Image (cartoon, rainbow over all chains, first blue to last red; front, side, top):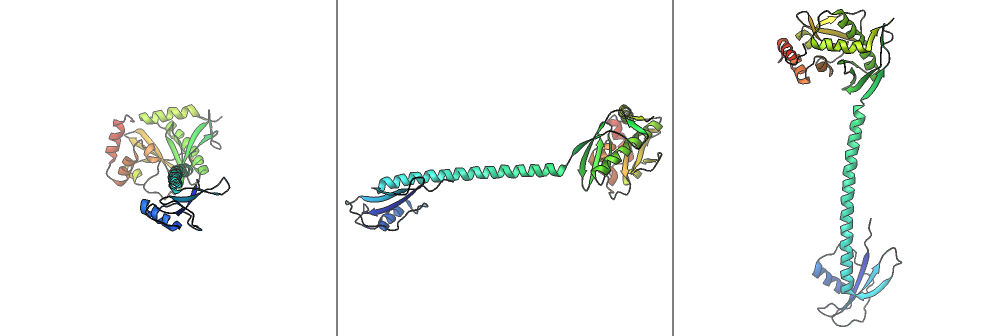
Length: 210
Length: 84
């Protein structure tokens, strides 16, 4: 975070008339540019021998240099302070903008992570159909996904699915359904197009044991 | 489930009772599709996988369960899709 780079202390005679107190210069500044937002240090203002119409001020640079005051013409110090302050405001706005963007990105990422965590979709390889009297010729990849308060396990190639209260139940029930569907299709003589396709897919994965 | 009655699905009784009841839907004597319904499930409106089992969209499955779609319309839809 950038620091307010300058403190400026005014004193001397404003162009409009004699003055020996900083407040006069302060009033002059306020009349000229309105209420500045940055810090004007008017404390401890002391009279300083001035030429008529010339206003002096002290300018103090902050860290990293040790603080010290130097006498400069107020118009120069004021311009410099105004420039520095404008730069400071610009940096602040940019920083705020970057922070806002980062916040937004963070919120978006958090939402995405929450969605992914909520989905909890996993692929589970099924290696066997034990204890059923059937065996797999190759592993089946089952997709397990949550649905409301339960899980659905599906073998999409054969369009067979089953539900369960837990992921394990859903997988066990899917195995059950694979066997039941295989037996059903084996027992039927007349199958529609989709059932023939299902039978053909299952035949590539399932066979009777022994 | 209403879909079972609506489609006049026939429960298949295999070697043993399973966690899911398996139903077949027939057109004449041809088995055109099958679907499973978990025993003791409190869901009446159907499970998320049933539309897939029935080869129709979730909306069509709802229509089927809640009346707008008849069995004949369902069969017609499957024929249009070339699934029978």
